[in-house]
Image 1: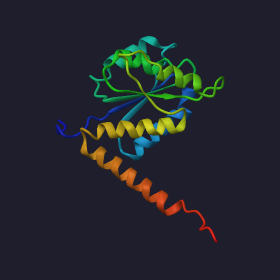
Image 2: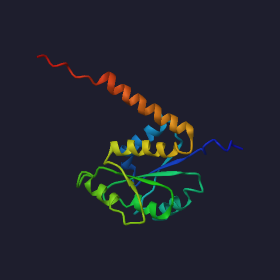
Image 3: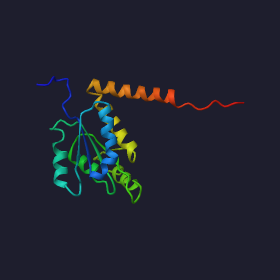
Image 4: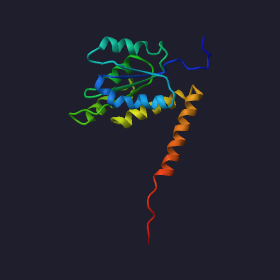
Length: 172
């Protein structure tokens, strides 16, 4: 039996409406991997596999998940529908679409009715990466190793900016 202070095997669920969304959502997976946060990644479509989506969302907490990152493009119903079926935090990542460059996805995810919250991130890669960082920060409230990993990430990011982003000195 695992130690009570050890996190379960999978804490974050990364779901997306279709395989094509992986191009964006892989950035969340990569960031969680770098931070050693256990996750699963699955295609769960609100429109094409609604029964699977309802099952995934309604059983997420009992399976040990603590945060769901849901990426979707176009109509982008997945994050909101998942949020309607779980009390876990749901972080929505708008996937860039061809039609409106992701603005349709963003507006669909961010405009949730009161009472069904979805934490909405930026469109595309930055949103996926930030969803993983936000999930890690949330987990850090309960698991010290994830707080430490997040703090190290922030320190390294600061150090990178200070050491590699230098402008030439103005003469004059």
